[in-house]
Image (cartoon, rainbow, N blue to C red; front, top):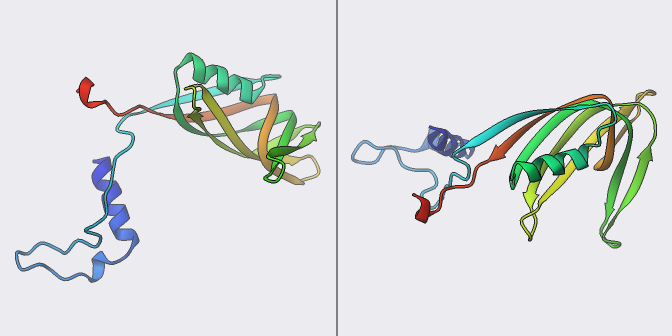
Length: 167
């Protein structure tokens, strides 16, 4: 069902189907006959992770991914930091320029993913927007974030497709 929905959405996105005529046998013309669709994740596990005061987000997510053998996931979260280090990537230096924030802040948006590195170890990649008490927003790559009150994170973990040998 998800596969059919994905194909329908992709076909509707171009808007071409609405204007297509019918084939002689009564079937509608296909808008993108050369398009190939692969369902990447037939199964998805979903987790809620609740972090508490003083928990560090990057280390906690890395540990969770290692313990649960997570290779591919995406997540969103809301909550509050007591201190954090955001970063801006400088391509010429191939490094992040850190921006420490040492005060209470609301997490307005936190999104990220986990992908396995070359050695199969989970790599946690997080971007966030925080607002400090004066209403100023700060955004960037999360290098370090310590929870002040709580953080509620919702994670979708993609299950690998079965190989032909395991079918």
